[in-house]
Length: 322
Image (cartoon, rainbow, N blue to C red; front, side, top):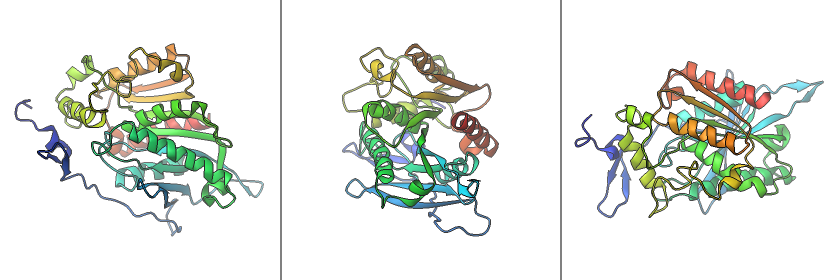
């Protein structure tokens, strides 16, 4: 791939307009309707609920159709608040990949999954995505405190076992939101841990994996750079703490408040060196970390390989139920 002929905008299905905005050409991924009523053969049901009409944010909630019971009473399930992948610029909770992933988590753990939408860059730059995710966590808390709140959460969810789960940019969001909510009264919700699947981080100085996988088919380096340029606040660079939390700064005081973390990665991911630096930073800040890096695999392999998808969710299941 010659860098002169490669167009990172086209790789994402975007065209750049003269005024700096983008037009999304190919980014209409197939979507899936929610299915709130159980039908024969379905193991998971789902429904969509508005969080903030003005911001056009919403959640898709998933629950298993077979609910485990203890002595004829329904056993309460962990609540997983999920943030999807897409480099801050693509996808929604009703996209087919996100819907499949959350159905798998709801079925396999089993759990009540709340898949949160967030406004996309570059139309909405960071920290908008963190604010929308924070709103989603507060929305879950409010449902649990409201006698007329969302029934699936109130009837089946265990507020004392809540986990934030993110993939790619969603893992970056989960990490940043966990720092935001550390000093927030979330009762009865208790965030027990974070599942960070192939978290998206960057920096100005190139790492070995960024150079080694610069021409990666899924996420080549010019595309990764473009994603950050569209997502970060204007006038900042990739050493901003949203992108590179490993840089020293006062935010490390907040990192120390983060709940226990599971970090999952693949050694063929262009961001694997960043992810391992991130794990090192968490350990230095005193955070309890479980790191699971697979020797074989590329970024988002679990989006295209069902066996890898199941393997990642099984690791998450052990972490959540452990």
